[in-house]
Image (spheres, one colour):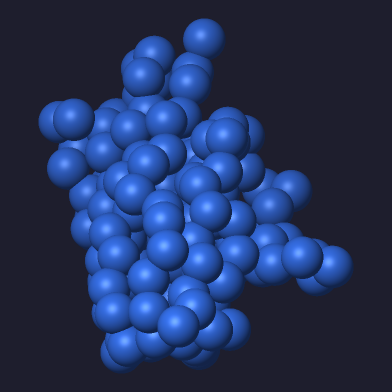
Length: 125
């Protein structure tokens, strides 16, 4: 079974930084897309950032551009999301996810095959 273990959430002040980590265990394929969605209270789950293990191409939601950086260690089946200059509007539960199709980065939840348990990010003074 494939399991995604996410970590790195927490409480941070506005302008601060956090780094989220997601490790996929039991994932036997070498080419996949891995990334993050988030869901704030009362809102729908939305895309944050994704990266292809095949060629390193990435995609960011507009609000993440310039502040968030996604990277991957393919050998470790791990993705990292470095989040800088955090804002109160970034407060949400962040979910990592894997799509087994590596040739196009999908940005909707239904495309993703495996999900982590979610890690809470709270940005507050």
